[in-house]
Length: 477
Image 1 (spheres, rainbow, N blue to C red):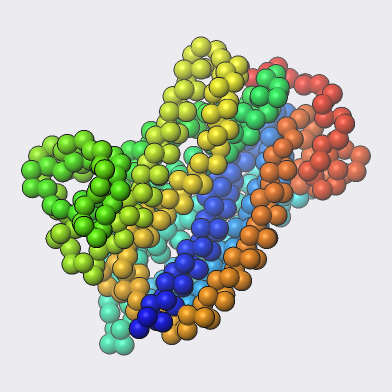
Image 2 (cartoon, rainbow, N blue to C red; image 1 turned 180 degrees about the horizontal axis):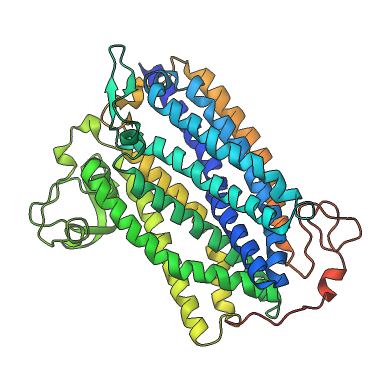
């Protein structure tokens, strides 16, 4: 029994490790694909070279990010057959077709137009190239649609029947499965997270180059666009997160209890625990800082509304409180920090100091990678909060794993760690190198020439970069 538990724990760690690596790339590429479509659309509409320069600057970064996302996603999917064969067998009739739809729609769409987007700028017409960029952006959205539909069904399973052999099979309507109760909230919340993640990366890069040269028109433009996104989308994301939380309370109350740290029920209004140390052994939160009845106000919109605690849930069905409690607070804390940066940028615009306040630029640089931390924290909250089930309330994680020995799973986990850190460290280093030089007039795209300002690799700026004069007025605030 102990060996079996070890094998299951190792399989969970391996899946968590590979998913974490994979998730950071789609979280960036989905938002970046849309940003590229916006840049090219603005270039076609206004004719301003700054938009095309930024498009060519970011398309190189998109190409590397997209490639790493595809590779890591393929590796991750193999684990359904190796480590989670029982889950694949039981849930395959439902999740298999949904995953196939993702390949047949999103992946084919992206693959069909990606080559035109990356290499067809001088080979097809402007409108056709813009169409290709739009198709890639739409493809990333469709991919998120199907993947989140699968994950949401595992969180809120409906529309299925259980066959005599224990398999989950579709019921009368596939639409009930696809548009399960948590799916709309989860889709919107995740997409907003990808846009914010991209905005803060773009804003961080723009801020970095503004600290070096506040007159750089390209850095000013990308920083301004990113801060508009932060100011407009961050409050929407917080509102969407609140709606998602209410939906989770309805369908997965134990997860919300863990998120809130409510070991005990509160019949006269539950407090909002801001910080503390969950003590699952003693069933309490130590050293807590709380706001009386605020949790009831947020979750029930009534200060005195009763809220159940984990004391109403059988211990065998309770999720791990500590990890869910802290990952939720990291996600929410970063969300409010993003809102703060967005409001700060609005104040800077009103004061006509958006490109002059170095402290704002330094804060934007620090916030640059936080979107990735937030999406990983949100994923941990969602997936660990679902435990001890793979299909919530119906199939336990302990009953989903393949009958493998712990040493076999440990060996593959170690191999994954070594290979992933080596390969993806190089990829991240390459992306950082691409970001290290500022965009400039005449920026080369993915494919460039030896004689241009960027060498064939498309990453090293030549001497002409610093002296290239701007050909248009600096963008206004």
